[in-house]
Length: 453
Ligand SMILES: *Cc1c(COP(=O)(O)O)cnc(C)c1O
Image (cartoon, rainbow, N blue to C red; front, side):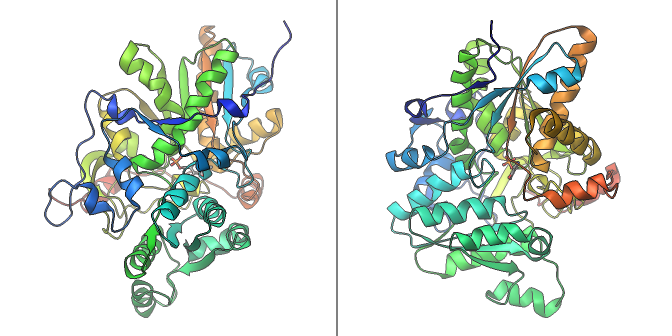
């Protein structure tokens, strides 16, 4: 039989609903808590920051299927369905009997999966009468996706980008500004929080913490302005399930079903987006697919973090989230996979990890770039440094198959391309990158900041 390389779905087969795994989980996620009263949060407690629809989705443990609004689905058509691809050349280079498939989320013009949630978030904001959206961004993928989605639905976007990251990745702010967003380096002089930081420390390089404080301040002090987030929260992962739902049909076209599903892990949105639709068969039908989240060895919350109530942000503004965490003021090493430098794991993922429905693996930085470069040279796509972690985990599994002679079917998420991250590749090729190790003492120290509940 002729070998089929790519499995393509017609527009009609773009999902009409997202999958909400919370409804099927045997042990539901524990509640989010108000940081002052420690009482469980209700939808109304979230709506002063987030839009109403997303606040409801965040806490919805009842409805397994949630309709994708027609206008959002129309915009998904601009780049979905994304291809499912069999990585024949990578298989051959590894001389493995494994069948390796990847869902290619790098094909949209913004270059990462984040657009899948940026579109619905902006759509709902517009519906609810919001005129402005704001957010923070580190490496810039989320800021870029949000800027585009805001322009699609006629909203003004203000993005606080970590100052040092604007210098390291200048083209991402160019993308945001091309779509009409205002980009401020954080800390900035445009908010009280920013001014305070600059007064104390004029050369502060910025961090996600400073940027979050500024974005939340803007959202809460500007009329008709909402705050948005690109990872970690339940509604974000919900939107990302279009990835796995399409992949499920495409694997059917390929005549296979994955033994292993693998994705890189920052806050969990591309991992959950690909994994949850498949995991529902483990939960409901007793199937035995393995789910592997690839995190950076320098930010190992899944394998070495502690399950605790902790803040979602460095500054301590968010509700308390029950999750695997390294402590909210954990300072990860400055690895190039900026999208994976997050201290915690998201509440759904954390419960699933606790219940052993999935597990994490740690990938050192150099191994992730080795893998990324092998993938580029075999499959012709330069992956985002984040996605390099997933590829490294896939390669480990494919090598195990070679040793055991087993022919497993492995499916992974190519969460983005690396074309705006070429400085990182240059550094790697020049031999200027290194691995970072982190000791148990360092982790224990940073966990001391976790609040008592
Ligand atoms: C943001 C990002 C990630 C990490 O975020 P998750 O929510 O864990 O998916 C991974 N890959 C790319 C390309 C990203 O932009």
